[in-house]
Image (cartoon, rainbow, N blue to C red):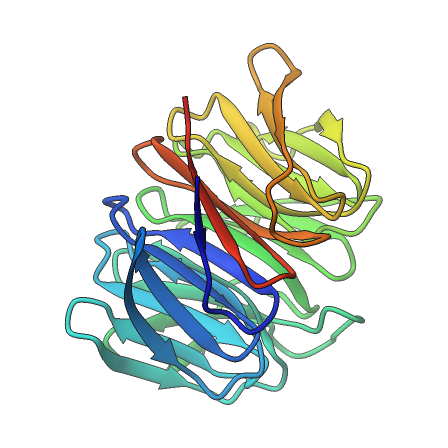
Length: 294
């Protein structure tokens, strides 16, 4: 187990690079830190009080981040330079993902309450710095997004608890109305399953056919704020405000393991490396813990 320090407060987002060699962490203070654990591999700076979401491009070249300064920041990781600063938007950027090799999907919203705007989901084609509206009508604040850049598949949930999964090359599909607030979602690596948090519970949807009825995988003793699949899609990791990281065996429908790492009283973000060798978790203490997976 490794403990990485350098954030002045809660770490809201973690992401491994596609080759698994670099971990990005971001949160309070507007810093995005790069780690090649245990080595500090660099820092990207923004004007945000909090960076709320980060994502690597499929080839690892770009890193996109957004937060409370209402700007989407994109850095060229290899060249250590800014590629694009997009915005400002009407609200904080709440979620970021890549839906194509060089296409960023991001949403705006406010964690404390609802948002209604003519558009709340946007696309940016890199290396440009202009945002265009998502091709489907989305007008409420975005809680979370997930995307598969190969299949051009996007999933998102709004502050009104509306969940949609959409192939962006096809006509608009149907939505699912969730009963409880969602703070996190994750697509399996093969894009066949979608994990969604529902307050204290973890739900699992089949993507095909869509819409589908969810299975309740399990629950925490607090809000579930982060989700991540293993590379083979057979395990799901969930982080909660009960200090716990739980690992769910999706084939058996059982809890396989539970970790209580020293990251504070709430788990605020987690990530699993694409090679399945390591996982990282962070909380409100500002510390990041990286551990080897069996």
